[in-house]
Amino acid sequence: MSEWILGLGGSDHEFSAALMQGCDIRVAIEEERLSRRKHGYCFWYENPVGRSINYCLTASGITLADVGAIVSSDLLPVRVQHALRDYDLKIFPHHLCHAASAYMMLSTDTKAGILVYDGYGSIRNASETNSPRNLRQTFSFFLFGPEGYQCIGSNFGSSYLEPDDFPTGVTNSIGMLYEMVTALLGFDLMDSGKTMGLSSHGQPRYLDVLEKFVEYGACPSKCFSCNTENPEFGRKIEQILTDGKRSFTVKADLAASLQMLVNKTLLHCATFFSGYDINHFCISGGCGLNTVANSFLIEHSSLGVPISIPPHCSDAGIAFGALWLEQFARKNGQAPSLTFRNRAVNYGISRPGRLYTRAECRGAVQEFYPRLFLDQAVRCCQDLANIIASGAIVGVLSGGSEIGPRALGGRSIFADPRSALAREKINRIIKKREPFRPLAPIVLKSEYAKYFADDRCADPFMLKVSRVHKHCITALPAVVHVDETARVQVVDDQYGDPFLIDLLRGFHKTTGVGVLLNTSFNRRGEPLVESPLDAVDAFLGMGLDGLYLDGEFYRPASAVSPST
Image (cartoon, rainbow, N blue to C red; front, side, top):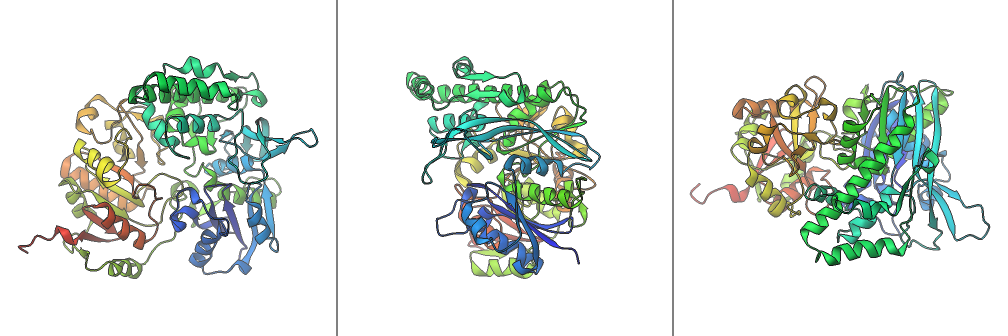
């Protein structure tokens, strides 16, 4: 029997665990799905990966004693490393783990350039003794291929060495810059996605103001510098907001300016790979979640190679990257070919959660009886598609849960994309989100070109945005953003999830439209649901019209009229 290897992800957020037997990944989960606290934030007395580890071990029917090695990055919290001190714990550099987590999605004969950029990565101590500061990676540039990898440069920023958990800030980091402006706009910690959504409503009128504090360097090690600790920077942003009376327009214009700065930074960084023999380009790290910048790069880059971003590009994906690096070391420097449940990684790894049994689903329903009931008239995907076409907004738990922040059909809410009212109801009433935030479409790969432009932006993980054809603006208003783009999830007709394929085909048969609205199945302030119990609880609390639990369809008791 092949040895079990446990990978752990996270830094000070986005904790996760993944379990692999030999080179086959069997299961993975983010801590937030189990703790029910977004980004996996935990209290001092908790093990930030404890629930994730137990989840993976239980799903595979083993104990920690059966695990031959545990792997992670050098930002794994010290208290976790101490708790695992009696095990074979191996640590790899943080940005290297990010890069490996992207390369594992490709075939082993690929020559890839990989850019990793985020808030901050591994620590490199300053040279001065007794210095209150250290250096941390903010950008890293890698080449990966069949015979190994090399780092061709890293950009560093400076941060304070705090004696406790006082919030960390790092200079020369586009991720930290984005978080800073997001906070000044009035959003919460880790709310940068809201800033990205807001940016499409504005114009980059303040780009020149932001760029006064930025320099784009001529080599990877000096690719980007920005002193976010300069008090004048914060004062300038506050002045813009105050002069504009903190109106929606001025906030949108500031968000648009910040987004254009990210776009330009990413395009600038990609140019450093132009002289290398690569046939693929990858982006990883938390900033890889910036879908607008990703598609800007696709439209403007001169690299001439495919561009991809793994669904786990945040710190949760560190677990996968560490697993790849461990097998790379065991194979004496030859790139390993990892699989997911004995299939190609690329098709299944975005949904690595465990499967729940029919008994578990029905047990969750029983917990909330008699507040919902089984509708036995819904027996197949065509029946479910008909209900959605009639205007119902439906929550879905199907198969394994996703890793990463995007709902990819495992834990989704589906609705009719032809109804602008559905978009408003989901944002304002069901999820209680800001109305300027977009909702996403899901479409079969074979149908993509009918609705969306440029197949380079056809992405299975919702990490790119596509421009829509003109007829979609009026035909599919619920999933077209104000800038006439959409963050599309593309489902492969052959290798994709059979449930999603059948549901999309069923909706097309009923309506003539091959697109559904797909948004994450979670309440405001909560992560995506994980278990059937989470799903039933959220379904009733959000006021959805129906709940699909892996083959059975439930309605709320309120749907029963008094006359029946």
